[in-house]
Image (tube, rainbow, N blue to C red; front, side):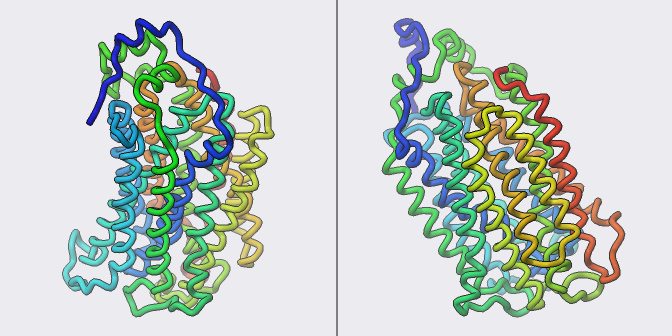
Length: 472
């Protein structure tokens, strides 16, 4: 059932109340489910390129498989924000969307890695060169990212709803810590399962068991973590929520006007747009990382054999490189955890943001020159600094700028477009850029240049931070 906050209440309440401080464990419980959601997200980001390369995708077309996830995020997250703003049930305002998204993600995580084992008709080509198996995998990827987005967004909204401005940096830092801790777990699963004896190779076109079991265990952890947050967190009822979040005059306007998303965009504070500019460079860079790290590590650090000018995705070296990418991403996540502890100590928010992105830029660029898999730990630890900042700073700055303006969930949903749109643009351009990069002597080491370009993007992002107006 959906309830509207009664406008008559605002004639009684003359001003917005200050949100009370929350104890540490209250802040922790508010975001704990994010740990499980991030395990799912880590498994997706570390293994999607590997899965589709195993299914037979051309490296020059690989970035196109990354278009659907952010595209679905652009559609789903604003809708989740808009409708959760207007929803109240006995289970809460944001939590029903969180739980539904997690439930769908669990089902899809059990199906996606089995795409190559379902005995679909691979001789029948759909949309030109795409097989039925690959089309099924693409559809599952779309559902997985849609459901993860649906589960992820409510956590950011819960912090915006229930945490005061003074504690928001701490709250988002806790969320960043749980996010990166979940990432570590998700990233190391394939390597860990291979280490205990589960097969890391399979016949042509089939995803190895080490990856399949990683998705199964990740799905189980996801639903348990979301259940924990659902049980522990009690959202405010409509009247209490209104006391702490709605300026009386703005609330009356909201009830009378119910502005469209387009109108809200035109009324968005400048912080929405300036932070969005920084987001553009950051998320385009990370899309290149998720798409091309597997090929970069396989070519540079594992001497993967080349067949017909491309890396042999069925080779032992390529699959070992795929496991190592999980370890590198785990190092990145650990770097993020450690840097997330530093972030609250940097009093100048914009300075901390810029420094973090510069460190990440250095990390990306260094991968182009490094051929030792262990030295890459340094590169990805530095990238982790940028990742921690990308998770913590934008939402802290934006929710502070939105306090008292109403439509918090809708604005946060729209702000997700500054995460998704750069990824879509990077995915469209990635394959085109790759075609113009000179191929090295081994015929397959052009992908490292894509991570070099990602580093340049983060430098631009660090410069763009100067344009951000924290309170407007």
